[in-house]
Length: 132
View 1: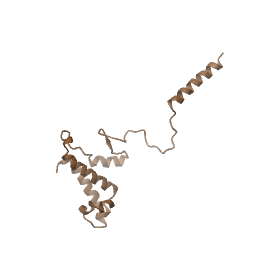
View 2: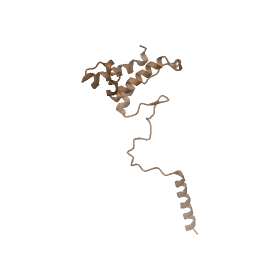
View 3: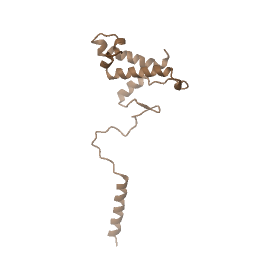
View 4: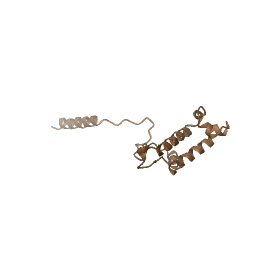
């Protein structure tokens, strides 16, 4: 198998070996990847399965033949889990990295620029009316 899918394949295998389907219920990894057992897998394993399928599909996709199949390396996924940044990619960068920051919903909403301009105008009018 080409090296472009090896990382995600290894991650899927590791996830399956640690899943309840293999460890507790004693199914094989191949059985766990098929219906109806695939629904009992953890979300992470389901995402890796989908990603691995897309990686394999990308190897024969003619639209990617010049740039090559470029899946997200699993090492990067592990690193983003530790740092808390999302790993959804947009133009080669994480879609959620470098944002304004985490919020708890209690932040004051920023004032509209029109309100700020109105306040400045009113203050200027008040200054003019107080000066003779």
